Image 1 (cartoon, helix red, strand yellow):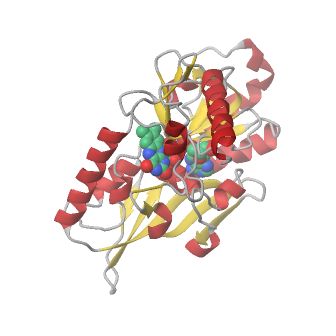
Image 2 (tube, protein in one colour; image 1 turned 180 degrees about the vertical axis):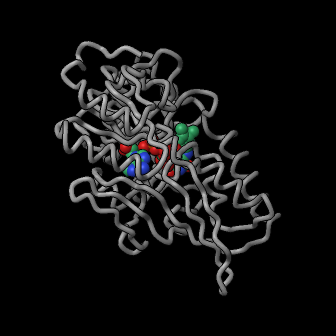
Length: 324
Ligand SMILES: Cc1cc2nc3c(=O)[nH]c(=O)nc-3n(C[C@H](O)[C@H](O)[C@H](O)COP(=O)(O)OP(=O)(O)OC[C@H]3O[C@@H](n4cnc5c(N)ncnc54)[C@H](O)[C@@H]3O)c2cc1C
């Protein structure tokens, strides 16, 4: 793979980076790594295979190219990158998917430790198959994200949230170089909020969930029902990033948008879903700019019609790694 000329000034850094993590690539289209299927190229991408490798990548950047923007990316199911792409280093967490089921304790709880890149849906299934019947993750069956992304966003559905079953999270603070194990009460979980939305510079390395033994048939039935509901009510057939807006206190964003007559409204290739007005879909050729314009338009119309401010749930990632 040849190095683009604009990265020539970084040759020493790139050589050192590839000796830590050989999975380097340049100008990788981010549209291939996001569920919205938009986003231009990332200057550099890398996929560490362990927390040690990931930490070494951060240490190297700090030592050699401290001003290089860095962004973590799980399954890209809650983000919009710019059409111009990302002028920095995108770290994919897909190489870190180990899951460890510990033995049950005397109270009947099992701790499950999952690396940040583990798939939520796969983990949810693993908890109810292979002889296990662990309660608490059926809500996540069908959420197309990673455990790391779910911790950051405190992902939730069908009355459950990941924070309900979190025991602790190991995270890395690139500024101090520390790896910290934080218990649930120190993670500031609230609706689509966590310590990691407050500190976008922190890196979730792994999460330990504390799960109770349940009845297998009930868990499996819940998972199946949740998946059926998703397929019926959500525009799963078109690229999207889930609910665009958070639920405003006392309202449903989708209903406010539908009642504003915006179902099906489009800007360029971005459209308010005909199936569920809380979603925006990429009808085929949407750009990030189309999506952002549509998001702004929808929020404006709802504000004018109902006086309600819609707050974005999906995250815009620009080269300044502001996490929002
Ligand atoms: C069809 C569909 C349905 C959805 N349904 C739901 C739902 O029911 N409930 C719900 O809550 N969400 C839902 N979502 C949104 C999304 O799947 C979740 O928010 C998910 O948890 C995001 O995980 P991810 O790995 O894709 O994160 P990404 O989109 O990759 O990243 C999200 C943010 O977290 C940061 N990040 C990722 N990994 C790390 C890490 N290890 N350390 C630090 N920061 C990190 C990223 O930089 C980014 O800012 C849905 C999305 C789709 C497309």
